[in-house]
Length: 456
Image (cartoon, rainbow, N blue to C red; front, side, top):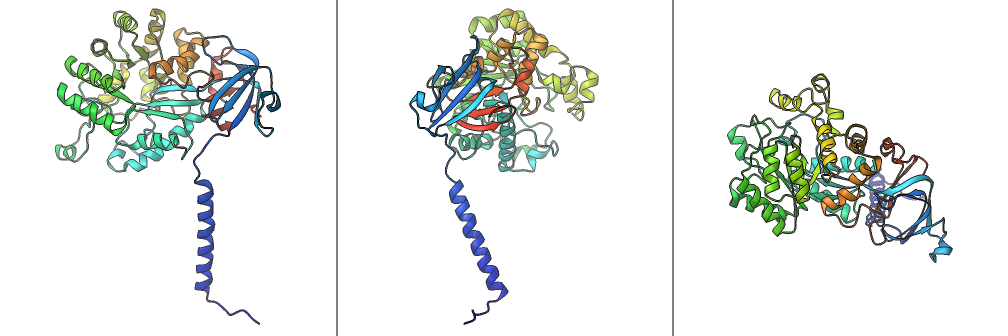
């Protein structure tokens, strides 16, 4: 008996239904949160488990549910370790293995290429996707933890939570959300008509000690991990107030005291000596940039244990001479911003040299995307090539120092109980620091994110 004829419309409907069912099955299959395997074994040819100590050769790193379980000498298999026979063995016997890098100063939601008024035309959702793209590139560069120090609203906070919950894979993120800024300060909007300013949510903008306490408390209520403060003007904003101190001493103390009362670290964007000195008096935990800190200021930072996050590699990309700046990625800056940028020259490298000589604690930060997302390792190269650090000191700045400065207890070294954030390179960065720009293997929380360049 012949089957009844059906209309094209009916067949199309069946096809769509089948496609929908297939899609639903696919979504169901992939909707399970990302999770590490129960066990993994890493065979490391050369292992720097604790930057600052000497590496060892031929070691086995055992990973259990995303954390380091143990580290043993030699190359041991699952049977010798008492693990299931099907435990994955990751062959890094030809590579230099160490903890994942940490960048304490990035802007993941920055880096879109569509013009300076982009923030006025796109929603937070757009910038969350930009942030995810940036985070992915950063992870592939070997940076398994980052601290985002400036994004609007919940843009990066949402991405942070999605990575935390295993919805997407990325570096672990600490986020400040909207920085705390005075009216017309570095993080406020400049050169907009008053009626436009009244229609914009200016989170973090505050004036007076009591108002600044409110701004910090509201930021913490939104779920930020760290308080970022614009203690001075900035180079890239369109304000004409320069880069000097813009919050008062009373305001800075109120901000720091409130952040600490809620268990948050507080860090300051600060260029001018006067602004840095004010943050030292207010007991800030770290200083970002710190461009014009002199010996007196740096010694005061050392005495109080305040960390410097110098973002020195920015000038490698922006330019360290007027000619390079005017022909570089910032060539289209407004005149008022260009004037401030041109004053930097090679000062970031000189600052790191002086701070290192004095013994100030230095932790890695890049201000990416001024250093392109994914090329964050150039900060370590700058420390060695231009500022007198040894390769080991540079690696410490990007691991154990950054973990301590950021108050991030589970990362920075590979020890039992700590996160299995593991990277590997074909060459040793202790022999040539440029090796940090060629990370071939990345594991974040026990999940392998990248296997190239010699990893097996």
